[in-house]
Image (cartoon, rainbow, N blue to C red; front, top):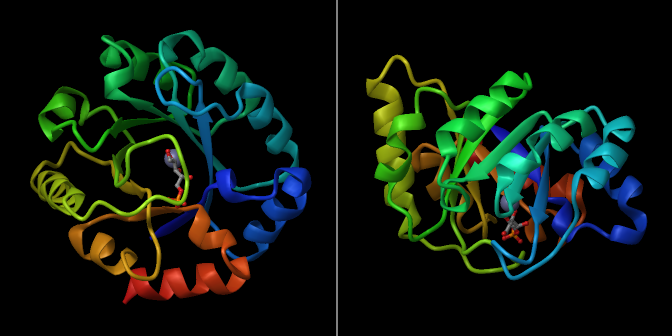
Length: 217
Ligand code: DX5
Ligand code: ZN
């Protein structure tokens, strides 16, 4: 079980402090939400942020690309020090090629599904990926409500993983993960939990400890 606090809900003026705080609190990944104002309505940051984070933390940098034409930026994020690059299947007609590009850059490759996208859309790339991210909100903003219907997708994905020995991906959930929703995600088969607003809504050490307890029971 891996916990991935999202820096989207951190204090941008004190980001180094917040990153070190979640690292000390036992986070596994740092989830970095890259938004371009095109694929999603919001704009955040780019490879420069990843490069700035790299020297200040040992946490796995789990970069969630919510951008159009992700193939144009793989090299930049690799150079910046990303450990995982996760790309929306809806963001490119060439998901297979982008995943090949990410793997050729020697970083872990992930694929993401929006709430409205069925699992079938990623079937052909499942043997290639290290991570499948199931969006449990519409991407773009932190602090939205969890969509319980997405649990069916997580369960089906977990079944596929168990019945295909050539699948080796982690299942990540992102959006609205908190004390009320985390257990159901874990029971459905998720093993990587992104939490933005929940992590920073209180003392991160306590929040993450509570979350870990809920997902490992
Ligand atoms: C939404 C982002 C999420 C966001 C989650 O587009 O992908 O990673 O930070 O925020 P919470 O945990 O507040 O729903
Ligand atoms: Zn995200």
